[in-house]
Each structure stands twice: as structure tokens, then as C-alpha cells.
Length: 64
Image (tube, rainbow, N blue to C red; front, side, top):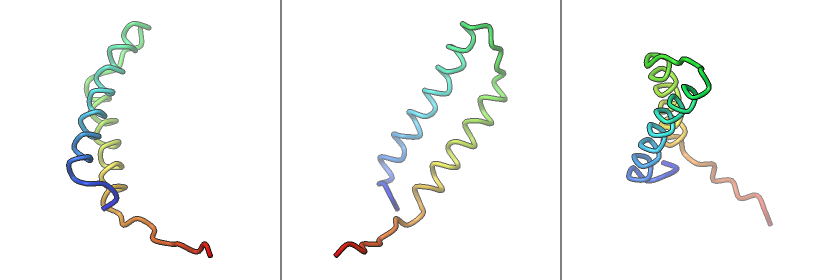
């Protein structure tokens, strides 16, 4: 794992906060975003984050 499970939970929680607040900020500019659209973006973002986190980190150290 690239990061610890506790850090991953914190990053996921921050991602959710950013998504909810982004919807609010877009509403100030009269951009209508449905809850379903935000949920889909959230699922994609969190899935990408989890996939990145569980992949092993590259251990290449080719420097002399």
C-alpha cells in the first residue's frame, strides 16, 4: 500500500467535503449540478484513489 489505511480514510473524507462544497460553489454561479452527478464523480474519484493507494509503490532505485 502506498499510504496507511488511516490516511486513506482521511483523504476520502476530504474528497467528500470538496465534492459537496464544489456543488455549493457552483450553485453561486448558477451552474446546476444534480446530486446524482456529484455522487458519480465522487464514486469515480474515490475508486481511483483506492486503486492508486492499494497498488504497490515502485521500488526502483537505479541511482548509483
